[in-house]
Image (cartoon, rainbow, N blue to C red):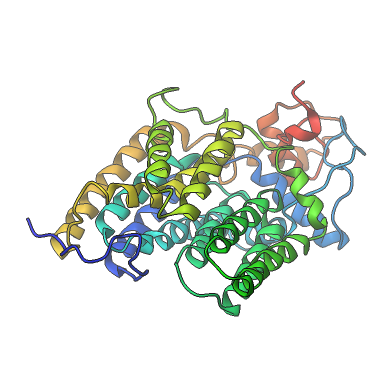
Length: 401
């Protein structure tokens, strides 16, 4: 068996691209997104985007439901809401296509983090994508994947300080705070980890320079309509993932990534302080907030790959091996289609036509008055009919009752 000559440790090798493997991984995650579930909450973001465009202002109170009408409510994802509204109006496939491309790009971006073992990295990232399938939906959380990946690509390399890095960090955090503000604090935390690690071995002048990274991240976070207060929405109003439970409470890919990720963080902590603590942070948060579990899988994949390099010699990424990996991924995709998409893909949510008939009936017959509906249908009826509903999926507004 042919292996790479052992020259540099994977922690010390620079990032470089493996385009064939990156293409295979990109297509794999893209098709996972195509054969994914759909979230009813997407309709609320679309309706919110429509209201923002109509009023040229963010909502300050609820107008979607007659049961909580007038209660204080706003959005932390105004830019996503407006974008979703435009895409929904342009074509029925536009928003799902954006979701698929964003998710696929996020996983492919992390492939070069371990260039010494690209085949292993591609395999682990593919497993992470399968584990993350509940998060591959048309909600603002889809942007967390690519923004996290971009921030890792900017901060992880062990390189000298540069003002271009400051600008990149500021732009990423600015986008994050406006696309999905409640998760943008994660970016500020990751930059803080980078600054702390760098400051331990730097002189006073370098510490001040790297402090500019933290200032840029905070400025980007603050430049949203809510300012720094947007982080207060981190744990409020987050819908649970009870709609998509795992096949087994203990035997599932998330638990596998919890165990492997925890071990990898311990093994790589000294060489990969930034990556290890980033994954450990998301591991902790994912236990508290299940909707963050897909993002943890993405963050854990590079650390797991680097930890495996301590025990296994990396194989050369020969064309035949890339082809074999592509065949394995095709089999995984077929298994996902059979086990996930077939039983769950037709569930009511954005992209399904389950409510078109009901909405057309209400409009054509001039039905008036208050409607009673269950939670899953409230989002679609609020957006598609424009009428007030009894209840929708905004858990933080309605409460558990």
